Image 1 (cartoon, rainbow, N blue to C red):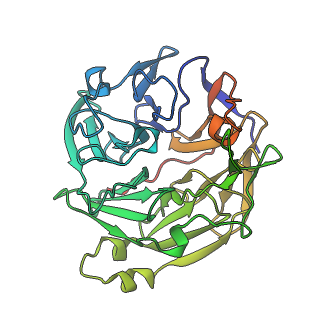
Image 2: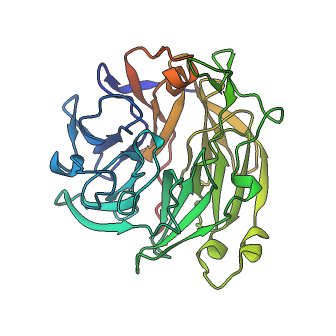
Image 3: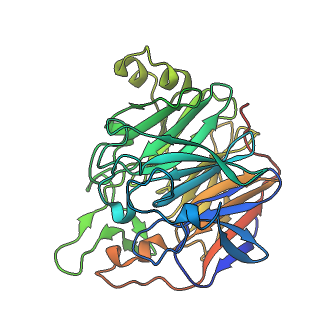
Length: 354
């Protein structure tokens, strides 16, 4: 176990979720619109400050269906070609999506210009869809996305980056669903993690397939619901083969077992090791190729470790106190500044399938 290094403290402003670090060491973060004042939903950390990225115009949508601006971003990922892909939920405050809002936006980091936008049809990004996280295999020209909706079907969305076509797989499959009580009672800071409205009884959190990672050899895609201590994997080849039936794809799903706690983010390194945030225990875990687990970081400041990024021999992770939001605290926002971006040395690099 290694001590956390602080990369950035967010002393004011909205809570961050995603982080991704480019091949040249540029650090990008994002801020979904969940109730905070969000002047820009994607930013780059430069000289100790966060600046709108790629610019303020792209962070100024006209409405929730604006295909030419960023509406509410949940995740950002630098791909193996060192391009930044922005995963736009199109769903501020978890509102129903409108065509043009949910999308993948690609930024060329040599020019900082948007070079491609891939939108999703209403049959793929449903009105209830919440696009959560994404991983890339450029050998297949494939992107794999989780739909973590707490109001509708969960599943994975597959994108053919050559054509821009997309489709759903594992649609509402049990492995993509939040575990209901009494199958799981999630605990954070010693308190059951439940939706606690100001008026009315507590309700279970229902967010499904959330974290996603791709094996170092590209063979399998791993995913986990937010509310589950288990995780699963599925054949990447089967996901990408549109000629297979849903039953054929489902037949390749493997239960990867109990990982010890609830996870938000998943990640892999080029040594074939998997990283899992553990928001129930303020920790980041790692599964080794032989299947054993070890703790990479455990720190009281890891209050809801959210998203990870591997770069330059380090694992970066955001900690944003998600569970202290008013939604889960009887209407009382218990978050306190600062939010954090940390890193720990891991002596490994990112998976680059290209």
